[in-house]
Amino acid sequence: MAVLDIVHYGDPILRKRCSKIQGISKLNPIIDDMFDTMYEAEGIGLAANQVGLDINLFMIDVTHTEEAEEPHVFINSKIIKKHGEEGLYKEGCLSIPGIGIDINRPEYVILKYQTLDGKWHENEFNGLLGRAIQHEVDHLNGIFIVDRISEIERMQYNAELKELEENSKSIIKTKLDTKGFVL
Image (cartoon, rainbow, N blue to C red; front, side, top):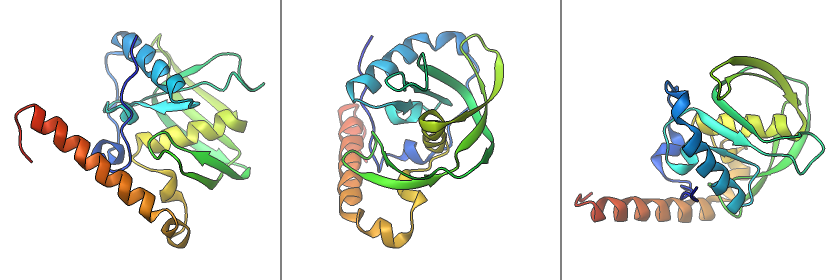
């Protein structure tokens, strides 16, 4: 198992709608690495595109609360319905480190997804798990928490976002240059 690099705001993969997974049986090593990465970063959720993978996969572990007894892995997920009003809750993001934003999300979410056995499920979630699901599905659809606030609110984060974006461009350029490509 390995800790993967988390990509940050500005990396194009984070704005891409992630692709459906066909070969579920081959996911176990990726899932193990993603859990290691999430735990190392002290996160409660991680979407595949946050580690540079263009696949519809995310995991959540809220076992430190009384809400869940085990970590969850969601494959080919789609939110079917949202309802209720939970209100504002401060959310952080591993791809936007150091920024916490009050986000208003619905209290309940109905999610259609596959599990590692390939079976389809449709369940309703709420609480921290429901909120984390909405956050990670946003990632799979190329949406950040900063996209969920007004332009005026977002202005206070512009400097940090610009710095993250510049750092991401530099990392991408370095990776391309070391492979013999030039931007």
